[in-house]
Length: 378
Image (cartoon, rainbow, N blue to C red; front, side):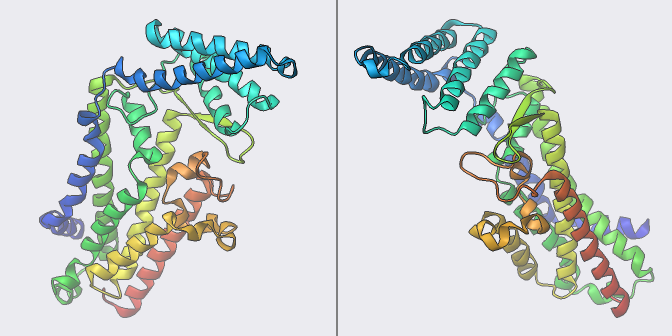
């Protein structure tokens, strides 16, 4: 217990260690105060887009009426224009329930036309996702939440936006990596390591105290800002519906959905396990160098691999699920793909992520502990 208290005191006495908490709190909460848009103004851009589509659709309808060759698709075009017009009217003067039912009817018709080949150029998978979400909202009488990163989102949906990449996971993990590098290199940078090695405590106790306090501190530096953002959002807009659906496609063919509660809990678990992995890797590096720049540089360059084309190469795709840094973007792991980001590897999923990150963390911690026992010092 004394060793843990000593490590806690050392971490909390270093003022630089607070930058992570402060920066993440700012990043997570600032949209709640900046991105405030009136409800009626939020539909303006969508209305402009829909009206342009309706105008284009009505022009196409007139052309089809004078062309016998287009007679077989004319009924679909007329129905699509009528549904679009009803959707526009619902956006302007309808209730939330009327808006979502009108949108569902229109988007469902678009999907039918896309699947029959009448419409093309759009992603059928993304349209299937949109229809599945709307169908679930209508069926369960759930209010639709704006997809943009708005301050009006209920707390559960707001946190889901954070996990969905609106705030880059690479940025979040980079902040955590800098914290670990600063904490684990502290003794060697301050030339306290020789004194620390003669402290009359068992190496195992010191090892556990170091890694547990550092990991707990960085974890709290991430989780506490999330809780603050959740509470502020809940106070402003309510908690939200625990059943709110989030669509995904695991194989690029079939579409399914999970609740926002499941998405947030799985995202958080992957975030925490990746932090554990960063802790194990940073501690391992600290055994060989006391350089903050060296430790942080290795961690940051590894995190940025997830943004690199390297993971898209054919030689890496098939083994991506075996590499821990493939899980540095939990959104892609859980949602698998979207229109702009195709599936890298179907095995890159939640279950494999949990196993992979735990195994790599255990390996680095075990190897580090073995090195300490052989050297009989840190």
